Image (cartoon, rainbow, N blue to C red):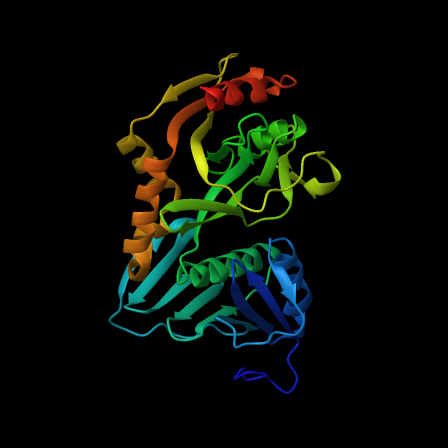
Length: 316
């Protein structure tokens, strides 16, 4: 299989393609196979049945006792209670019940070790593993949504942490006829001198009235507008939910936009091996697109209100 070591009895082996890169993903334990395949099905990856070349990325998931991290590595704390241990092109990402190891060789090798395979732990390990690998090929994750203005065809990114209203705002725009990339996760890459964004997560997830549980759905069966393959962002909206009735917009300077992008992309500084290219991409994006603070008011829940507010900025 073109240089890939195939185990005698793997629980699951699959190939996927994204932005010209080929991924080989295998699960060594039967209890991981179906949940991990479902997780990968929720991302905008193209299944490949008969690859004609060696993959760029090889990812293996296994259950059992977590291996020890080598001593004397530089380490620091990351989000969600994790710790990152780095040694040049090799690093480890450790959580209470899981460990991700990356070797920056050809192909890039990722191993995800899971001692307690809960749904939340599996989702975290697979996401961190795939994104860590894609960063080695110039695709950097952004916690944000992407849409396309129907009148001007301007690319718009909606950026913010969980609970900032990204999915609600994106859903309102998609219902009003805006094409969309994703409501929550994007991949950024540099095409010559222009930053492009493509969707990563395929489904939408809206919080319920209490803001606790999320209702997931496939947008293709809900919205008339199609999913866009990729966009060149021209406008960035950094969202936050306010208490006022009316939504407030404030234009940002280029420096303020860059600061907010770094805050939304912590791996641009965490992952030291690719920090330079990642920060350069964010700098280009800050120059390429106009940034705005968007303090969401209750008026955004009105029909077409989000489309009128965001659309007026795109037309200007």
